[in-house]
Length: 234
Image (cartoon, one colour):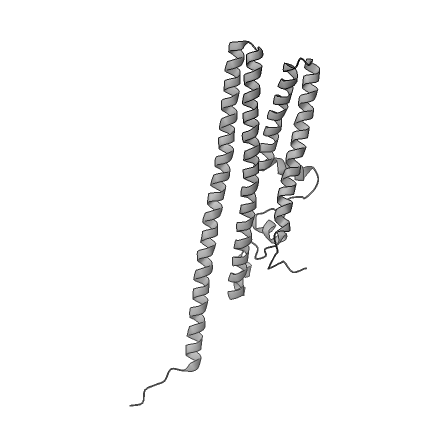
């Protein structure tokens, strides 16, 4: 009895289906890994901000207790200055860490966009079902993170920046810096009006310096990124 030989076309088709399934499994595993890493990134960001708020709250309570006990004397001024220096340090360190975490989050989004591009290379007919982007340049990242509608300049851009975690932290840290500088001026014997003016100047100077730091940080990140799947021009 003659043995029926498998057809070459069927064997090749089965091999292609197996390769496609294996690619999808590898890509899905990496995709879930990046999602888990993003979740840990968010958790650390919120934890660092919560730690700073706890330090700030405890510092305000301590300063209030010392002020009540010393009646705003020299002991109060010295302790308050030391406490505010500590709070300022924790705040600046928290801003730096949150900025690093945000850059890490952008890095994971780039990875997921590339994986999404690989999905669509295997099954291009599914593109109409995706709401996230398949491109790893800034327009693609903005689409995935829903930042494509955020203005880049003007008052609305400033309001959006203040709503972010780094932006909110910059305002709080600037207020702490203003209180510290004003208190130091008061301890040195300056008049109340001069103390207020010095504190206001310290607030705006600190806010500007922190904003410049943030822009340089994100600018350095984009310089190190080389998109592999840039969005084609329309």
